[in-house]
Length: 402
Image (cartoon, rainbow, N blue to C red; front, top):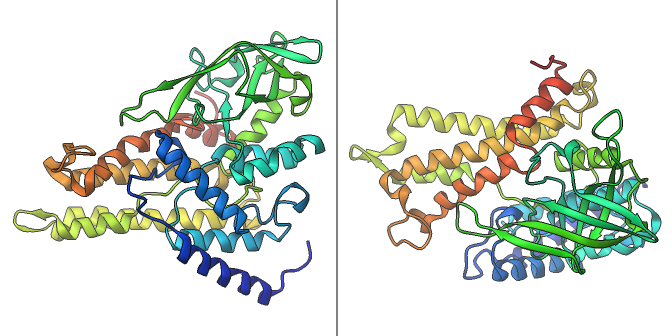
């Protein structure tokens, strides 16, 4: 990629800023999800699908992906400017999280030319929604124990088994699927294969899972002798564990190449600060309470720390000893921060924090309570916080297993 002309980049940034300022709709008349894991209604889904397509058609999504696969063919700096403009104007999340952030980069990295040509443009336009088939009901996050079977039969594989916590499974056209094609060898990770599996075929069924919030953002997916073409393997048969681990590097932010934009909006500490000014404790603004004010300061420090952490991951001298250490900590820090600050916001609401969406007594329409309950999905999806701490302890800090 040639050096970026500062004038071209500035012109692109100004155009993106003007476009998002004109086109962002923050209030479509119903509650928008904060993350892709919260999309639970057809109304939300269709609005967000149309929004992603609109951003893509305007040239502000996939700007750094190759032109031959539907991208803009520009330097990454251009996409970064578009994402900043989207965030600055409070644009809704982009829907196709697993496609934009995991499947797409993976295919650009390890996929065949035919797979890239078939899938990448549909990922960007949101024509093809993707989901993930890793976790299973009996094995949770222990991916090495995956029991979903894929048996070769001519030019296809016959798949039988079940996957759970399938985000957007109801709407997805394709799934990145980890299935067992051979019995385990010396290691339980042997014999797994990574598929690009179609969802809208005979033998595939999804059932919604009702969450704490009453929404149905997750599904359980059942495979009953579903046939997947043999050319939909990424890598080689039996080499799925390596591909899955590369996918998790994208999922956890340890590797770049994502399409741009964002698929989750963090809870805004400044909104919590404003709430603390309005709420009262003992007839005075809550913010005048020294202990409460100290906690707000801690949250502000955390925000700055998380922002700096993202920047630090790009500086080689800070990543020499532990190359993925800074990046791997990001998912844990951001998901736990979201849970903690939403919990704090509910405590500010006092007794009104018990009211939920739709109750006239709820603060801000019950937004904070809903946000708090949904925050737990971020501490579970993509590897629980406990697993993230194990990864950091063992693979980053080099600590022994207990």
